[in-house]
Every structure is written in structure tokens, then in C-alpha cells.
Image (cartoon, rainbow, N blue to C red; front, side):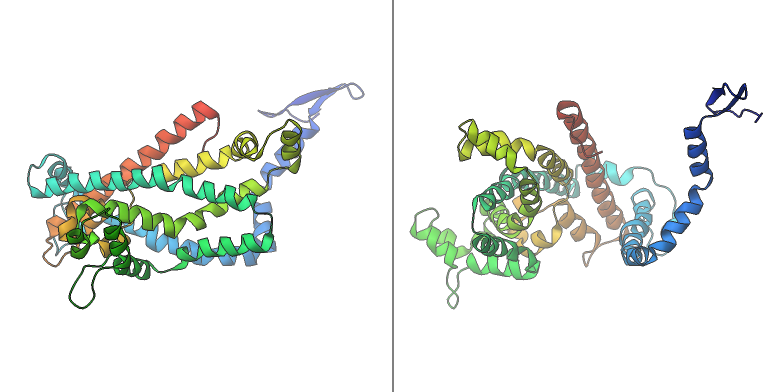
Amino acid sequence: MKKPMAGDFLVYDKHSNTYRVDPEQAVRDDVEKHYWLNVGRTVLKDWRLYVMLVPMILVFLFWRYFPMYELLRCFKVADQVKPVSEQFFSGFSYFKRLLVGGDSMSTDFWRALRNTFLLSFYGLCFGFPVPVILALFFNEIKSNGLRSVYQVLTYLPKFISTVVMTSLVTMLVKQGSLTTGMGILSQALSSLGVISEEVAYAGLLKNPDFFRAIYQISGIWETAGYDSIVFFAAIIAISPTSYEAAQIDGAGKMAQMRYVVLPSILSTLVIMLITRIGSLLSVGYEKVLLLYDPSTYMTADVVSTFAQRYGMGSASAASNQGIASAAEMMSNVISMLLVIGANTISRKASDVSLY
């Protein structure tokens, strides 16, 4: 008789009048015993796929994980001579200066934090529904060729460089001068009476009141088509029998969208919404950096450009680099908390969550 071990599930054998290990448990024990051997065999069998993962792993190591070492600068005494590891611990002095410093730097940080949240919030309110609407529109086009043409036309702006895209925006609303005149968009808005001729001639990008609108409209034009791919893929995965059942019940196109399409892609909508909420404080600084100038800092300056200006400016000191690191770290921590909160609320409210 085999000596019973802890955790074994024993069954009674009437023929031998003994207890033996349950066959299912024996299989589980064997799999656990040879787990790493099976993993090694799988890796050797598909070694080409794992080799293809090496460049991506190196990218994450060098651009995502190794830079985390510099986060220590947020808590160390500023010293450009000594490496970060040899600098003395300074506590949360940089964070205190940003939050309750009372100087111009603290004021600029709170302004940048507010602008970052507002730009992302407006993008969430106006930019998130547009890809869904585009996906619904593509789904209603019966001609595959015509649908492909429309999809390509909406995807193309995503593949335009940020520098080229911002240059196009600048040309449309460029500042007036004796040689260039007003941009096409500025002329159209001026002729319609939306803006005055003086504002159009001075340039919309020079006016802080128009920066957020220009940023959001150009962002929707750039990313809406590309973001609709995920929603369109979820829509075409819906079973045709669902549409047929809705048609039998007398549902028209709008009713089918409401009662068939939207409930079917609800999980995709929730996942994409959670990830979008997590990026509320992660406005990319490239586009803002190329569009803004000191005259529009009031509404255009975000946390990333604030950190770039103070941490990497020509007159930046070592202490300012610590301030910039602290600002970026605070933004990332808040973004992480937003993701956790949105995911928790979604899991409790709809049983759909990111993790």
C-alpha cells in the first residue's frame, strides 16, 4: 500500500481493500512535477516566436523599466556631480514645493495640472464617442469597396507625423502677416462672424481661448478613424441571428443599434473607457509642445510640458530636475489611482472590468 501524502485525495479500492491516490489527482501531481520540463519543451518547440519577443522585451527594459531608476531623483538632494544613488535622501520636499510652495513654480504646476485634466476630460467627452459612431456608420455600409475607401480615408491621419499634423493645423489657423495672410480656417470663421477679423489676423493659436478647441478637433481628426478599428471588430463579431431576431420583432435600424449592437459591444466599450480614464493625466507633450507658446500657457501648458520646461530647459538647475521628476511622478500616480477606481466601479456596477 502506498504511503499517503499530504494533499492526496485517496479513494477506497474494494478489490484490494486498500486506499489509493485518485487518478485525477495523480495526473495533477505529474503535471506539477514536470511543469518546468513541459515549459522548456514548449519554448524549444516554438523558439522562433520567443526570439521575435526579444526586441520588444529590450524596448520595455530600456525605455520603461531602467528609467524608473531616475525616479529616485524625486526624493534625493539635487546634485549634478554625484549620481542619484549617492545623493542624500531629501524626503518629500519637491512634492511639498509643488503642492504648497506658494511660489510661481507651484502656481504653474497647479495650472498645468488643471489644463492636463481639462484637455483629457474634453477629449473623453467629445473624442471617445466619435470612434463608436464611425464604427456604427461603417457597419451600415453594404458595399465592401465603398466601406474600405471610407475606412482608409479615416485611418490615414493616424499615420501622419505629429510634426506634419501640427504644421497643417498651424497653416489652417496661422498668424496673419503682410506676406502670408490669414489661414483658410481663420478666414472662414471670420467671414461667418464666429470670430472677429482682429482675432483671425492675430492667429487663433496665439489666443488661449481657442487652444483647447483646436487641440480637441485636431485630435479627433487624427485618431477617431484608427480608434474605430476596435469597435468595428467587435460589431462584425455579432451573430447575424441577433439582427434577424430583432427584425422579426419589428426593430428598425436605430432600434437594432440600441438593443443589439450597443449591448453586444458593451464589454469592449467599458474596457476602452477604463483605459481612456487612466490616461486623463497623460496628455502627450509632443503635440502641445509644437502648438503652444508663452501667450497660451494659460490654457495650453500641461504637466509634461511643465516638466520639460523646468527639467530640461536651458536654464534648468539640478533642483528643477527634481521638481520635474516629482511632477511627472504625481501625474502617473494619480493616473494609476484613476484606473484602479474606474475598474473597481465598473466591476461592481456591470461585472465587466479590465482585471
